[in-house]
Length: 329
Image 1 (cartoon, rainbow, N blue to C red):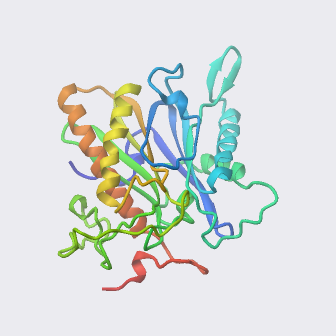
Image 2: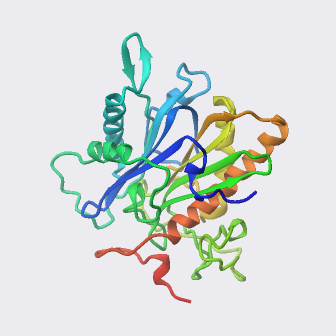
């Protein structure tokens, strides 16, 4: 297994990502879309999720594919980013066909970033416009760190951010992850600069410091945010041909990556969830082995993406937290 050429979720051919953000608002939206609709599922493990259109992703529901998935800041206000994404897709002629009508299918999830120092005194909700801008900017290359839905993200210790990573398996299957790190927990070990995800790091992608040598296994973390203020939301993607039941299992396995990279994770105060998507471009030659490998790859990819999001965060005037890069050796 090795990183893809971009080390982004868009190494899964046919997928594109767009960001839109507002530095004054200190928030934004990120959209994953594709050249064609793609199969999707979701698994929620946090105690305080905020979601849109996730019920239809259950294996027994009618719709087999979606047109886009959005991740947004703004708490519940950010769910309206989906309106902008839908409007943009409709203008492109995209959507689920019902006779002559087209209804774009756009699930999404939000993080709470309303207390991060940005100006939240808007009159008109800014998130529909951010959602449409993010969709219209979707491309193979995109910024990580303090960008898109990661613009205003925070963690227990450092600024959070938007992260992504990819892996190409020995079988040729590609896996990618996209994540907004706004966690109650910490991505780094104790007071050090070392990431919990270090054992899965590839090519010094988040500093190359390696695992921390010393940490207290009896450490009992205390909440650094209040109920509902924290969430890590993610998408894992693959070109392997998987249906909704298998994708739901892939999303479940990918939560291991969140637990590897954030301490603690999946708390009652977080809304942690993971979408899983498949473009279906590659048939599996050895289904049992490939499915086995996919779960591991999705988890390790997500752990790397979380660390990359925190590692890539950049300082802004008025920050309430330091960036990882501010803490020198």
